Image (cartoon, rainbow, N blue to C red; front, side, top):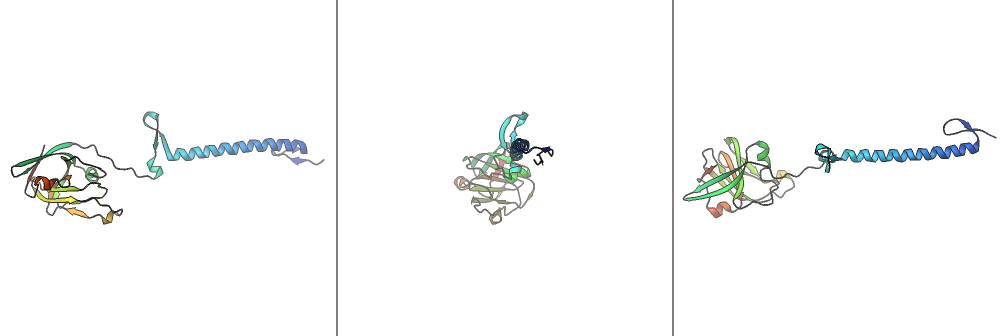
Length: 204
């Protein structure tokens, strides 16, 4: 009767070895299954962040690891009342104020609508020639380019959203003259209210 090595490396009888091999293979299969479960769990843990503030579960996706770009949302900006004097008429708008680089870059992007008497006021640190584009802007706008003395230098009417997926194809709208402020309102409002170059703009 010939001896052979069992899975653990010791000599054994054939029948004994068969039984020990079966037990060994069973344990090995269980270990393989357990290792697979651990690997899959680690993979999902790397893609999702399941903990929120104070360790509570909230199912948030880790956008950085998932390589997904978040969509811009409306900014929480201060609000002022703009008064545009056109001859004897005074027209008021409630505007959000974008005064930092980050706020100005977002502007009215991704807004699906804008109330008739609302808009946005862009404030720049220095007066100069300003260029605006309509990348990721969903609604047409009128742009009022205003100098440091509060006078409208140029009105760009009915500026349309850029529909090109390539931002290099998005045209720019320039101020024509040096300005320090820009007010954006719904397209058609300047025509409707008679707002034009030379009108005076104040805000409180």
